[in-house]
Length: 263
Image 1 (cartoon, one colour):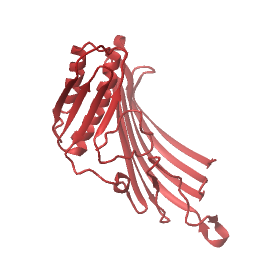
Image 2 (cartoon, helix red, strand yellow; image 1 turned 60 degrees about the horizontal axis):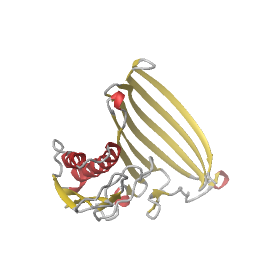
Image 3 (cartoon, one colour; image 1 turned 30 degrees about the vertical axis):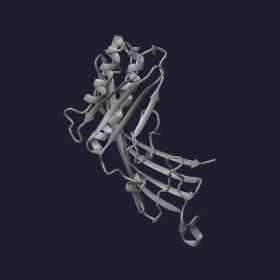
Image 4 (cartoon, one colour; image 1 turned 90 degrees about the vertical axis):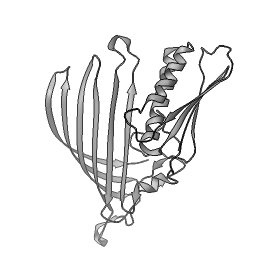
């Protein structure tokens, strides 16, 4: 299973995952002449109590070797995100590190069956589902190096029978093309899609009190043409535990409309 590394996905698009081990190579200005080192750490599938131990072991190993803290943090983020993918989806696996005189290689593998075409697993005819989980590590010593996290889940259904198309080469959904264009006189009304989205973000950690927010969105998209659409959204937003401006518990109801032409 190819792990999802930070920075390789778009917020609202499902990443493509191949059935092969993940391998990421990094270089640092702090490499010194050293003999080749290889080490592997076991990952236990569905064990959420010990999840993250392998990436912590890698982090401690690099600290003992004297690597720069900022470089270690980058490697730790890659390792943690990939390890969590294995724990949640890949069964048992391993996280291996290889350090040479001029490079560092982090490799993640798992024993799971894999999903040959994950984009098809998230689409069934007019129905589609996608989501993303993120965890952000910051470098802010005065604030205690806080961590932030969040996720979203998005689903849609075409009332007129169309399907969201997935471009494997670009790892993204392509613009929808109505089966019939918008021609009311001929009884053609384009493509109609209803959508639902739930999102959550937690910006509270250590000395940072950015608040927590939960959004529930219900939407209607009307595709008049492959490059033209109307969008209507209702959003219920709730914010709590924010320090500045101070918000203990507040909510808002938002109505949005958009007319979009894509070039």
